[in-house]
Amino acid sequence: MRIDIIKRFSRYIINILFWSCMILTLFVAIQIFFFSSFRIPSNSMEPGLITGDKVLVSKLTPGARLFNIFASMRGEQVRIFRLPGNKIKRNDVIVFNYPYPNNLDKIEMNMMKYYIKRCIGLPGDSLSIINGFYKINGISKPVGNIEGQELFSVQSNKMLKDTNLYWSFPEDSLIGWNVKNFGPLYIPKKGDIIEMNQQNAILYRKLIEWETGKTLPVDNSTNASLNNLPIKTYSFQTNYYFVAGDRIEDSKDSRFWGLFPEEFIVGKAFMIWKSNDSYTGEIRWNRILKKID
Image (cartoon, rainbow, N blue to C red; front, side):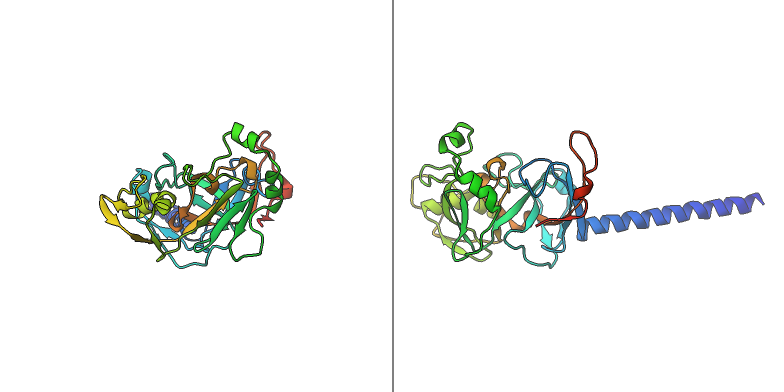
């Protein structure tokens, strides 16, 4: 009798362990290949997304990423593979790994640091900012949060300078761009070949150094060199994107730090599944299951 009880108890424990492992495996698989949840930590995407919103992010849109998670958690730079998916579109709200987690001079992968912004410029686009409004060469359809751009366009340059929000990427006197008048900036796509003149060296240095792992000095010379080897042209190995927050005046985005590679995209945010007031903790019932536009 005691042996039967022990056997039944053992089978019970084994079943619990088996189904617990299956549920955990399914949960991890969903997180890796299909969907993830992210909390909105700031007001940079207002009014569409507010602090305390929790959004569902589809990894099916760009395709799930495969990389050495453990090496990435140790701070090592890893090679990223992506499963087949659909293309990111202009105005999509996307989650991505912030490409400058340590300093603005070097692109690095940090899987624990995420941003959520609206995609403004795609690979192959030529993007400008004219008096605060985003413009894509050859595209008449507006991009970004138009109301936010209208409000931003009337803000004084003096106020922006006083709050250190005036000068933009690449913060170089030769280029001289600012957050209201910027570009045109060509956004490279995989296979694009550019001439390596002084201006392109300034604009694309960080991208090229990330792709090659080599050093591209920028000086007054018209000749560029990678690890002291002269180059006249460069062919990009991946696609790049330009993103911006909907709250134009309060968003640190591509206007300030530049472009980032496709490999850093986590997925497309498509729904708010939960929202809590950051101060009271109360659930905002009117935001649950709200679609993200």
